[in-house]
Length: 328
Image 1 (cartoon, rainbow, N blue to C red):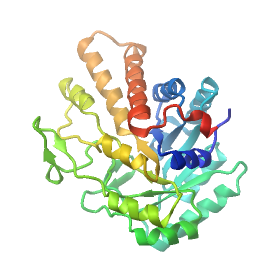
Image 2 (cartoon, rainbow, N blue to C red; image 1 turned 135 degrees about the vertical axis):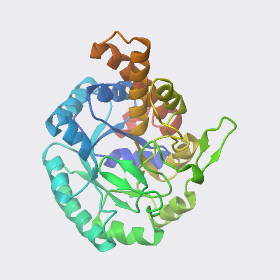
Image 3 (cartoon, one colour; image 1 turned 60 degrees about the vertical axis):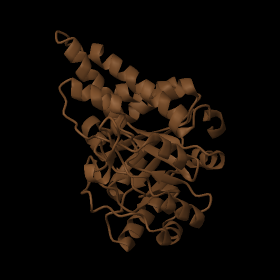
C-alpha cells in the first residue's frame, strides 16, 4: 500500500488506548531495523525526518528509503512525517516532496505568531492532494534535538486554557504538548532527580494533570509527546564501557509512557534510544574487533539491536503491536 497520513491511525489509537511510535530515521539501517520490527509485529508506524536528517542524508535519499520500506512491508501502514518543521517553506518542500504528514514547530514564537504560521501550513497541507496531516505544538521542551535547543529552566509547560483556541483557529490534526518530557539523552539535570540503589538517576514524574486537563478540553483529539525516549541504561552502559562518556544520561520511564498511551496520547516520538542502540553496538563491536573495517560487519548488529529495541517499544510501551490491520 502507498504511504498514508496519520488520520486513521490516530482515530484507532485514541479509541483503543494505544500510541503510534514515531521513530526518527537518518539512514538505511535505521529504516530497516524499525520497519522489519513493525512488519513482524504487525504494527503501524510513523517514520519521521528532522531538518537535521534532511541536511545529512538529503531529502530524496530519505524519501526513497522510506518508499523501499513501503514496498518491503506492504501490509503495514507507514506515515512519512516531518519532525520539528522550523518554517512554512520547509513544510511546503516536504509536502510537495512526498511527505504525508508534517509538524510545524512554532512553539518558540509568541502565541499569535505560532497560530499564524501553523494555520498557514494547515491551509496548504489540507488543500494538497492527497491530504497531508499537520501537527502543531504548544509549550516548549528542554534539551537538544538537532537545531531545537532549549536550556533547562527555559522550558514551559503547555497551558490547558490555550488549547481549544489554538486547535480551533489553526485546524491542526494533532497537538504536541509539554508535560515534562525533554529532548536528547540528558533529559533531566541530576538536581531534578533522585538516585536509585545503583546510583542511576530517577527522573521526576510527568505532569499527567496537564495531560488530563488538555484531554478534557479536547475530547477525542490526538495528543503527541516529544522527547519521549527512555534512554535504556543497558545501552548507556554499553557506550560508557566501550570508550564513551555519557554520565547521568537518563530518559522518561517507560511505565509513564505506557500510561500516557492509554489516555489521549496517540503519537510518541523516539529518537535518542535508536541512536544509543546503534552507537553502543558499534562501539562494542570495535572494542571487541579492533581489526575490523567493513561497515557491513558493524552495521549489521547495530541494525539488529535497533530492531529488537523497536519490537520492545511496540509491544511493551506503545501497545500498538498487532494493530496494523485496523489502521489500514
